[in-house]
Amino acid sequence: MKKYIIRFDDICPTMNWDNWEDLEKELIKLNIKPIIGVIPDNKDKKLMIGSIDEKKFWERIRHFDQLGWTIALHGLHHTYETQDSGLLKLNNRSEFAGLPYDIQSNKIRKALDIFTRNQINIKIWMAPAHSFDENTILALRENNINIITDGFYSRPVIHLGITWIPQQLWNFKRHLFPGIWTICFHHNNLSTKDIYKIIENLNNYKKRIISVDDLLKNHTIQRINFLDICFNFLWRKKIHINSNLHKYIGLKK
Image 1 (cartoon, rainbow, N blue to C red):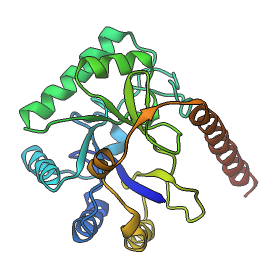
Image 2 (cartoon, helix red, strand yellow; image 1 turned 90 degrees about the vertical axis):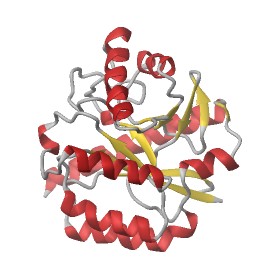
Image 3 (cartoon, helix red, strand yellow; image 1 turned 60 degrees about the horizontal axis):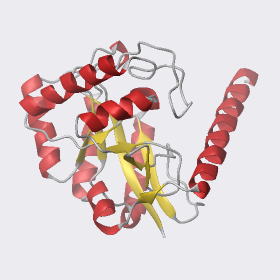
Image 4 (cartoon, rainbow, N blue to C red; image 1 turned 60 degrees about the vertical axis):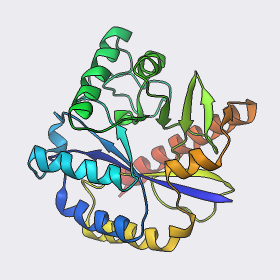
């Protein structure tokens, strides 16, 4: 059976709150419990769109946590220090991949300290730009984070000593074979029309949407195997082909 997990990236005090308000209301109304990637100390100028008081922001994050939403650590500053695409080879920029282990571990500790001060327990990692490497995984494990939301698999797997909950989509797709499909949304730069389309799809697909807690309670997660590796390779190729096609179409217009 197809099951979806919903994921929202780039949650921070300076995000686009006008877009977020409608999404938040609908998620709560439908009792959908997404993964939200929270940037603990945002320095990314592209995400400086709106503003909310820091105290109110963390009160809101605690409320989401109490609702059963999954709060993910989404980097430290969400700024890019290398051009390393990491293990996924998706984007050629990273806050973490390519940096020494000690630097990465220190960043993660600083980020976790901010969550701890604000009474939020973190159990899952969400890499800025989907870029991280084996040193990142070692640093995560050292800091007691044992789940990643990323990877192009059709099911959750254990790989490199950590659990990967795959993230393969950026929108709902009807024609998929059975599996666990995480849909990643970046709400900050979407139009009003785009926001309403997400809300429409949340209503249409709500019976198939599960939370991370649902997944961990009801699914046995196994080590990566040859079929997982093949799927990962083919799906990544599909993403790159689609991306290049969209760029080509854009240039032709």
